[in-house]
Image 1 (cartoon, rainbow over the protein chains, first blue to last red):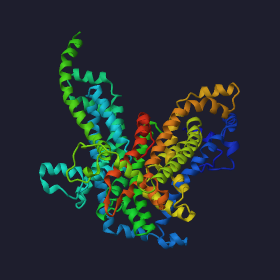
Image 2 (image 1 turned 180 degrees about the horizontal axis):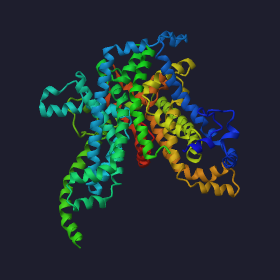
Image 3 (image 1 turned 30 degrees about the vertical axis):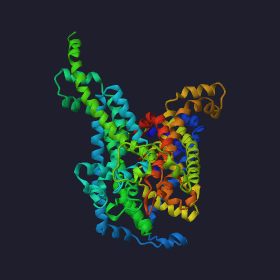
Image 4 (image 1 turned 180 degrees about the vertical axis):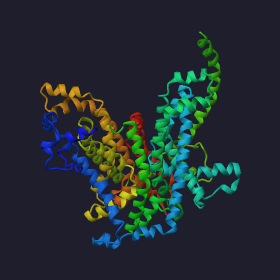
Length: 336
Length: 286
């Protein structure tokens, strides 16, 4: 949208950056724009009526709660204030100083970042390899693989978590049976969640398994855009298959790859359900990531303000990634 | 000429190496589909095989006793009812609002249009807990806990950004001349929408509503927090009742999960092509 467009369609909404609102009508616009303006006037309110319900809805369920999160994190809202409706007392930055001074918070943040990094690396790495593999397959194998990917993709999170919980169950889990066949009987009855590292291995498996179909389908779609002739030409000129990949294939799929990676960072940073469901709705403290930490502070310890403050810190941590994602989107022109 | 001989030389070689790739591809397919296979097979096998230390990859016999036990679990019927009421109402409402907004964004250039799209993309990246706490507090103050409408409003709005951006993609693909010529021929703006745009938009609307329906059907976190009344549990929250202090009835859990997943799988197969495109075109949903 150019500056001229903004100005011509501007009047229905108050435009803040206008220096002199009173003297704007006669002085700013020449004769020609004014004619155009009059023509536009008839329909120019219609789009605002059309988006009004959406704006109200988004403001009510996203923006208002976000504002309330900010407000609550400067207050001290507990169970009493929630049920009595009394106004919560203001405490300034106390919640933040408490949280930032708590070593547990830093452990949780560290755990969240490491978990996210491992999940994203595995998802994108394996996803890219499978997408590249798909180009080399015969048609019927590719169709079979696509079908299997879609079947995995369509599993509701709750159902997928139940399956993985069953497979990694200490008594009746398939995983223990299979490992016991190879290693020995000691593995029967092995509890995967006693050691958080083993527990997170199962959780990572669930997250990566659930994310791979989307990554593969999207990357494969991008790969079909790579001109076959270019690759053949490079091969004739003596490029190695790695050289072809690096100089011909990769540049084409790079924008899509970066986009999905950014999305994966955001999604895996916010992983909540997988951990929550695998730990039977009551994750132990060693399993808490930032989302669960915020949840347990709010709903288990009923300090809604602490929970909000942690959620707000999470939002701030993620905002950098979100801005990067938006810039990528704007570059590709998707927002226009 | 030289190129045709080249390809002839290359072809047998390529076929040979393709076999390795095919085997690898089948291995990957097996790995991806295995949990789904395990779900279905566990739902169908006798309970004594499930409650066994020696799990076998093939069932000795097929039985529907797990399904019977799952349907006899308390609140099964009310859970279906709750899920349907909440999901369908949220989707119908969401589609109406999203279509209006998508028409505005796709058809008009107005001040704030880009900002609106950006906000819609951004709000989807907010962590769920950042929304959960204030929404819980607000609904609690308004008496919306344990009521369907609280959940409906949340689901309606959470599908809105994605649906709007997806439908906008279909709107911009309908030539504006069609609408204009209908209006030249005497249709009102609304008439042009109803007679020309809407029929062309219908496939897009169907895809977007299926997507929204699946999302609402699968959601459990808000349902778990906002609904505490057993008789108003949605299906996903009801699934948790298979786990008690005495352990988990995995057979019935797998059977119930199969029943919940089945409609989603069917719908998913219908729209998966459009969804892959929608997800990358700036509409985000995790």
